[in-house]
Length: 123
Image (cartoon, rainbow, N blue to C red; front, side, top):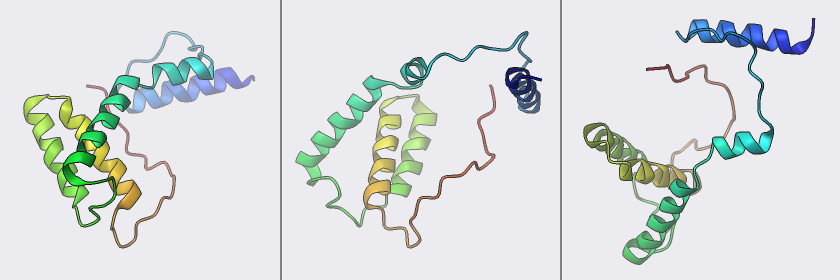
């Protein structure tokens, strides 16, 4: 049996598990450049950069506020986004996550890539 039907079988099993309808036939994956183009948003990144520049004027250079509670800020901005739908809060969340990643103070801060088995469900 070729690899494509096996991949398609597992994809359909995954779709059933998360409550999505099955696909009628195996989907052809686009090339990597197309996937990168579809899965990225340059406008979002530019907004993040712009807010860091403004932040440098207001608060100093990135990373100079090691005492800042980025996780609390992420939770607060997530609540505000849920209440208002304002995408600005998503940009703020991403920037706080970047700051925490770069200069966070969690006592056991580390990176260990893994599949946590907690994935989004279709709405």
